Image 1 (tube, rainbow, N blue to C red):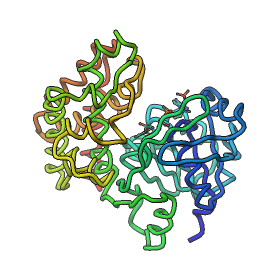
Image 2 (image 1 turned 90 degrees about the horizontal axis):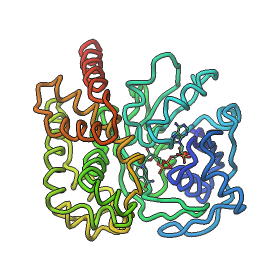
Image 3 (image 1 turned 90 degrees about the vertical axis):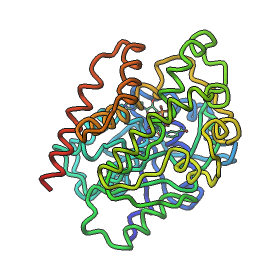
Amino acid sequence: MEFQQYVSIIGAGPAGFALAADLLSHGKSVLLYSHPTHLRHANSVRETGCLKACGVMEGFANIPITTDMAEVIAFSQVIFLTVPSTGQDTILQEMKAYDLSQHILIAVPGNLLSLIKDAGMEVGNILETNLSPYSCRMDEGQLLVLGRKKRIMIAALRNYDLNPGFYDAVQDLFPGVRLRWCSSAVEVCLSNINGVFHPLMMLMNAGRIESTGGDFLLYSDGLTPAVANAMLGVDKVRMDIGAALGLCLQSTIEVSNECYDQSFTSLVTLAQKSPPHNRLKAPSDFGNRNISEDVPDLLVPWCGLAEVLGIDASPVAAVIVLAEMTTGRVSWRRVGICEGYTWIRSRGES
Ligand SMILES: NC(=O)c1ccc[n+]([C@@H]2O[C@H](COP(=O)([O-])OP(=O)(O)OC[C@H]3O[C@@H](n4cnc5c(N)ncnc54)[C@H](OP(=O)(O)O)[C@@H]3O)[C@@H](O)[C@H]2O)c1
């Protein structure tokens, strides 16, 4: 299989730039797409002349950047999506005009892209991961990579005719990360532990975020024992859903430990001592994807699945309701219940 030599990456944020720089340094040819209305980071890098990376990835990289979707699709058979899942619809609308029947989309993270949004598009295959391989931030064209995961999870929408060469070729696209292949995008989505960490850390520190403009460390200052207790409630619902679906999900701390080859026994200790987490600054306000992505695209489908499966979803529902009240949104939960029904029904029919 040779499809992995040329790689397009859609999404010019920290995760997309980190992946592009990493793949370039491993001998791949890379093209990075920035949506024309989301050029913030792409413009900074263009002004600087090249990407400067520091932290666990060091050096300079000349990354070709385009805003032309036709170029992206012609450039490679493999297309990574590194936009937040809230941006997937915008990108898919742009892609609809093209023949993607020979392409492989890899959504990093997927957050159920293939189950919810495949309709109406013929794509060769869609792969989804649970997390980004990098913990990273970007400022004025400079990329700070705080951590690189050792292990992430992945699933393919169409996995019935895949051969060992396919798995090896996909593995080759994730330098330094070992992929764990899961049974479905639902298992992968349930393993995106950002749904456990992010919304509660934001909501339980809301006053502090707004009064300081985010001038504190999100994990080491914000993940205290009371916050951790609330997270364990959400984590139990997530794992109960997995058990009801016959999946053996790991707890959030187990997933995180495996990601970074760590061995923490509590969320609070992880928040204090884990290098990829304990230096992360809090967001400055609530217009952040810790809420806008992780509530509608993780907690809402989890809640919908739990309710359809007859599992007590109240800890997850409580977080969604609080997020809705805090941000003034009113419809997230209803959408999730519909999605839960749709997925359970399609599972019964297949
Ligand atoms: N960075 C990390 O450490 C990390 C860790 C774990 C998981 N992830 C996940 O990886 C994904 C990418 O992360 P990131 O930090 O690179 O995200 P990001 O900076 O928030 O977004 C990536 C790029 O997508 C653009 N974008 C946002 N909404 C869009 C839309 N509706 N249409 C088109 N483009 C859009 C952004 O533009 P703007 O700058 O204009 O918003 C940015 O250029 C997210 O799902 C995130 O949750 C990231």
